[in-house]
Image (tube, rainbow, N blue to C red):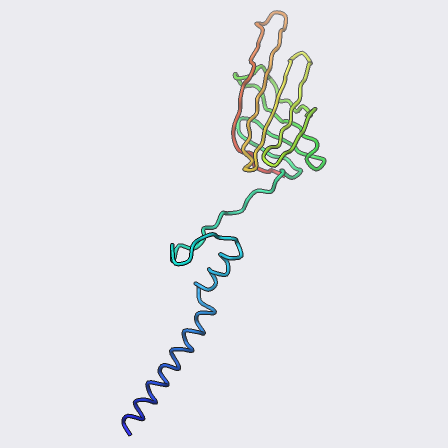
Length: 173
């Protein structure tokens, strides 16, 4: 009688353990991570890197930049309109790096977008000659180059070509 009770107890225990592991395998964290990893296209070889899982890549910025106003450092701003076909540079001026004494907001004469860059450029030929070009990459990193010069009576002339400003744009509106 003891043998049959012992066998019944062992069989019941094995039965319970077997169903318990099957039940948790379908709902456990490892099953969820595996499903998520496969859905994201994580690469890896079976049996290696156990427990590491896939690392999240974070939210990628939309590309090309959406219409709106973007601001950067050192008085640099950019307004994009028309589905990325028009742009206006905003530059505070008044610094010693350029010959731009006052804020300007020239309209771009050329705007192009590729898979990896948004480029806008323009020129002004008023009393202060200004040529500018801005390149923005998908991380919203920008590089602005300004050529500026002027010649006024009773003042020393100013000529500052190729002045660069670099930074990251943030969408303001």
